[in-house]
Image (cartoon, rainbow, N blue to C red):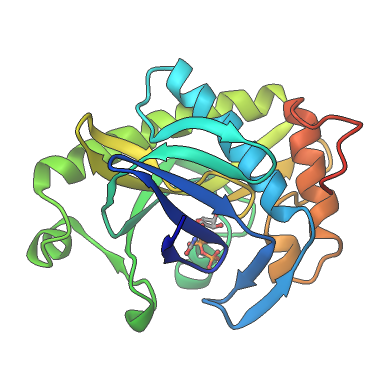
Length: 238
Ligand code: UDP
């Protein structure tokens, strides 16, 4: 199978006319590729965690591109046209929000913040509003309204789900695609694209461990998969 796209951590292959195979690689990057490494087992853990979260969303009535998990590090998904907007939802202030605005790191937000960033490396993924998105022909007003609704629904579902597993969903990013079924959640949902803190200790369990050199990032991703009950003790992919 020939790759149709290769990004910083995933390679996409055409499976057939309306499906793609998404391979999660062990590459890890931060700061728009400025910091790079390879972490054995990361592709496996992210494919596994993403698959579980897509299943949870589907069971709760959110449409996604997910079809099935293929061991160890791939998923079969519907082919979609990705809307080049990163939809970010925040429950607790962290990361760029605290750099740009007077929020304190770790501060609980009064209500979730939904943020649209334009996926464009050349311009440094700038935050945009509806008017900019419409004028750049990224999406229609109707789509943007639906994207916000989808993002908030995903947040409601995943926040409750992680809470039951002893994890705080601080913030996350999703990508949304167009397909025959309308708008669907696509790409990945993994500790690469979410901030996850232990509920008791506030220990960081996501890619910030790599971004900020806080230790063994794979050990943290394993904790997440363990809490979700999806990692098999006997598996030897990590
Ligand atoms: N995020 C992502 N990809 C990006 C930018 C952000 O997956 O290109 C995720 C990030 O992991 C975090 C959330 O979106 O869970 C909010 O990120 P933020 O805007 O704080 O950016 P950062 O501080 O990570 O640069």
